[in-house]
Length: 198
Image 1 (cartoon, one colour):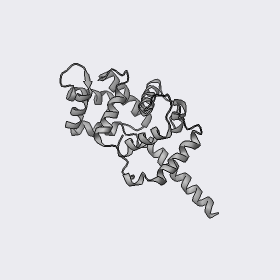
Image 2: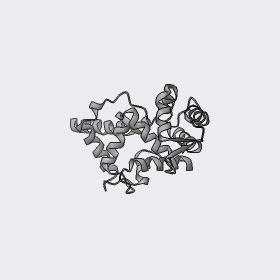
Image 3: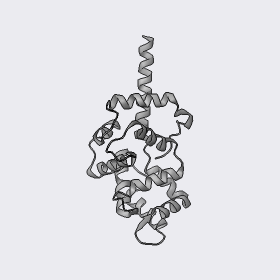
């Protein structure tokens, strides 16, 4: 979930929110984005079972009120987290995302599943394999060696190790998805300008 260098916090203005609202309501006139619509909205199709499970977990973490749908406010909160959230906020979100079974701890299998799914969704060739990254994370930050990471271990370990923090951020970079929204907003805006000039 790397920060998009082309967007600053000031660009999350009323104009951008209006553009996002228009896109949201165009794609989802009911104002409630279901899981199926969520995948369609972000152009996520033909996913493997593991990638689909990851996207479902991501959907659930954005569904703040746990009603099975993402409304516009939850959508804006998710984009704000992706675009301008602080390190601590993002780490807490990563942890919630990784903890697929809701146990309050992350095991290596959960971490590996997420890394593989994100790599499949992003489609880019990673610098390090999902297996190697999961091994590195556990070898460096599972301080008590119990095979699970608590929220505290995860937060402290990632914060303390700049290399792992950077690799985690790069491996979970969702800017392709966010840029899809961002570019669509500009495409719509450019089309309106051209239409107005005609």
